[in-house]
Length: 93
Image 1: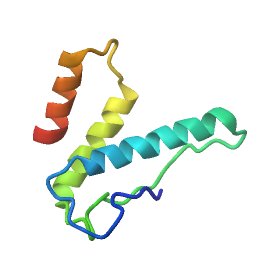
Image 2: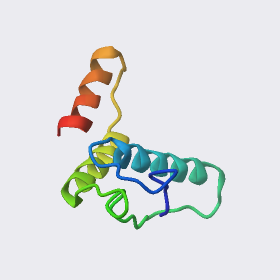
Image 3: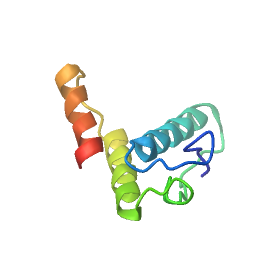
Image 4: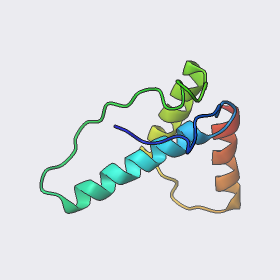
């Protein structure tokens, strides 16, 4: 899959961009599958932000895995506490 992580080449280390980019890719696949007869059933995705973006491999993998897990298991309800807890997971692990 190709999902952009930056508009111009720059370091994105210390940001939540790998999470956001992975989430956007998962949403795009879901949206595509809802309207297409030919479904996407697997995606190969590199370490988002690990090249020019200089995100360390373990951090990119952690954020991407968290986005995937959160996508598969959405909260039953959403309020400011749930949103804050999720944001802390993204930033602090």
